[in-house]
Image (cartoon, rainbow over all chains, first blue to last red):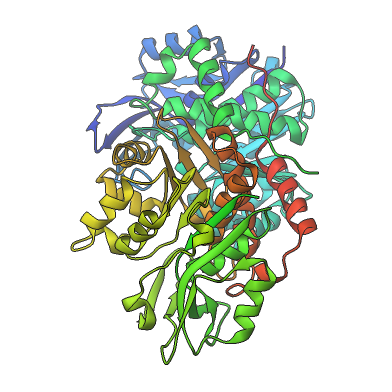
Length: 310
Length: 310
């Protein structure tokens, strides 16, 4: 079984959407990635940090999904990273209300020996130097390194560090606005080209409700729509759930070709379509195989067509 | 060969985009629809009106594409409909600078006897009562009536007339904002349901650079992306070109099933991807079979994937 190493935040989130608001609930990029990847036949670990305020029930939940937590550091007397945000009516934009880094501020990731030869490394959104440190701890070159990041790291003083990480990864996943910011190009086709020249062979551009694009080095493109839903309840974690499905599927199939990445993108989009149906990780906690399979069939009928190219 | 009846404007457009501006060039919904549908094996006619300022070269161009112009009325001493607009930098929004209705103001469409039994009727964006008058002139019930319209007709005093037309069509094509306006629903899934209950079995929602959705009565959905392009030069006519490809393909294949509509949507999107590459109708005037076929292959690799649903 392939190993999937996930680094990212494990956090408390407090979320407001037009549909309601939550108290501090389980959140964090690594949490969403891990829950999503758990639907594939992989051995995954989360490298992250929490405070001793992090409840046992959350630990138990992640463990019950067969996620290794030997690299989840618990800081005595420390407080878990906390983020609070409010979504606007269109659900595409949000304001951050509170960011308390807490134990994340001094986080030094430590990859356990068991995972230093992981086939796939998923670098969730974090300080670029933390991401870099994980890559440097690998003793065997991974088959695939996937980087997620955000606009915050694309400005001084972080941009140079981010660029260092970018040279070392195979795939980068960012959203459309971030792709424009990082590349200086408005056209996403041009943006992907510029970003690919920074290092990654594959560039994934996430467009939220408008789906996701993946570009390879030859500027071939594959597009997966987001499933049209009656209601998006809470978009938090959708991008990380997408990344978890993408990397989980690739690690499980051990096929890192562009053709297989197309299928991986569909799996990522499929899982993300569940994530947004309830607050936080709620929907992902109960999601089962049959629900996933049925929705993959919807994705198929949503996108597949017959055409005569004679 | 199936007959395709197209009603819509034949016009002069003056266009400004971030890439440049044009003088008065050939435009109009029926023009774009006709040029696009001419790539399929159909016998099509344009029902419209122009003034005697409309140059012979434009007439010759449309005739050279085998478009019947016996129902294109030329008003002696009249001036052709003129529209001028300026696109914003994102190319998704535009300001109308000038609208001179001219001969369109008193336009009474007259369908020639030869086309009163057309299998497919494409109602381009026009006053709803003009669209209604065309439907009423048909002596044989068409296999498919497709309605395009816009936000302008969704307010008083036109809305009631528009609703009358909507009850009589099989397919409506509108953009996402118009779907929201017409239905009062933000979610496009809910909007399509509301609009379908007004009459049309099929609702096509165009999202510009974000592709197009088609919903059937059972709320099954198909999605076609727009081809990601390095540059969108001029979006004018893209929606009409899409509609021309959609109806042209359906009329040529004489198969009005939802499955075949999926392929028709792809043909429409494919043709629209050419339209935006140059100003006005310029690209559509020279477009050939081989270019179309090659780009359909790009659409296929953009959207098709293998998935195991065991």
